[in-house]
Length: 200
Image 1 (cartoon, rainbow, N blue to C red):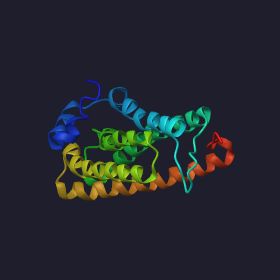
Image 2: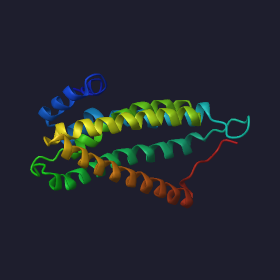
Image 3: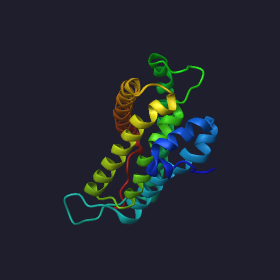
Image 4: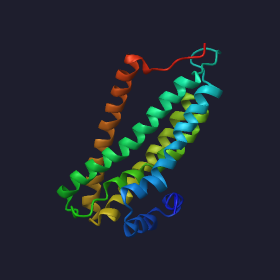
């Protein structure tokens, strides 16, 4: 079922993680029914916000991106999100053995994809590119994603909560390192000419 677990992760996360654990979706199915669709939300919202609405920084003049520039940047952003989920999931599977998880039942990509659901959904606020509104929405999304990570990891991986807490903390650390690496990569990409192009 397309986006079948999305609502449940907000209304009854514990039960939904149990349902996810019993379902055992393949990576292809997970991406097709969940990740590919949800990752479109912040990408499309950012495209609309940056080309149609625009933002102001220190002046009354509205700044917008050209449609081609916005499309290229949002497409890169979309691919980065999909790649980030996959890479983080593989890191989770790699670390899982240390915490006593069955190595023959990898669940890392599922954990990464479902825990990132609030971030994808809150990305819709990018349609209105106001820095304070976006920062607040991002903080809310990150907070609930972290909650889902800590709540869902021991359920999905079938390990005690105490061990799950340490595992989730390790996953969070890797996620933060990946975020810094993504920012650094963006700077490099911009420096070779794929940066934003403004309409005025």
